[in-house]
Length: 135
Image 1 (cartoon, helix red, strand yellow):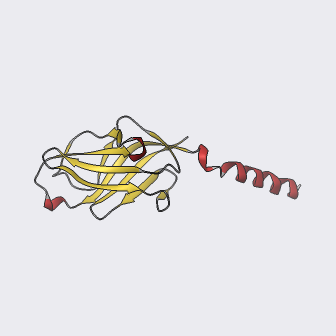
Image 2: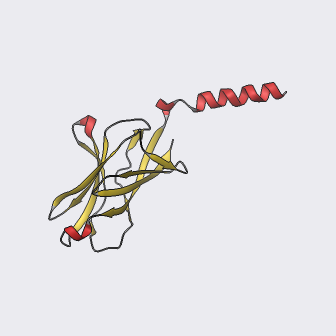
Image 3: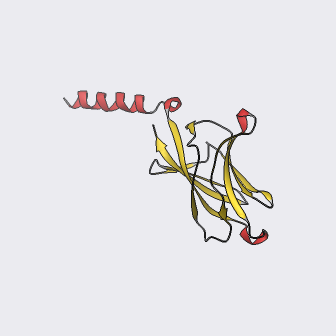
């Protein structure tokens, strides 16, 4: 009986570890920090960009005033679905008067997933967390 239980756990583990079938649905993005003092008061928004698809915009947030305190959680529209190990997804912060403020690539080799619901990305000028669900 014990051997059968170990075999079942092993089979479930092997099947569950297939990377190519996991899809992450992005729903929210939390702007943790950026160099806010370097920019004038303006409306800001975030874009999720797929570099592999010719810099296609996968999703954007609504515009929010830059004077709001951080962290700031924003809803993505639409809710893009990406494969867990897809390369070249970028989070970009935009201002309505200054244009591109900062960007950070989601490097699948270095990402952190907390509780299987969030993906964090950070660069020298932008720190963001993307929340979503696994399918």
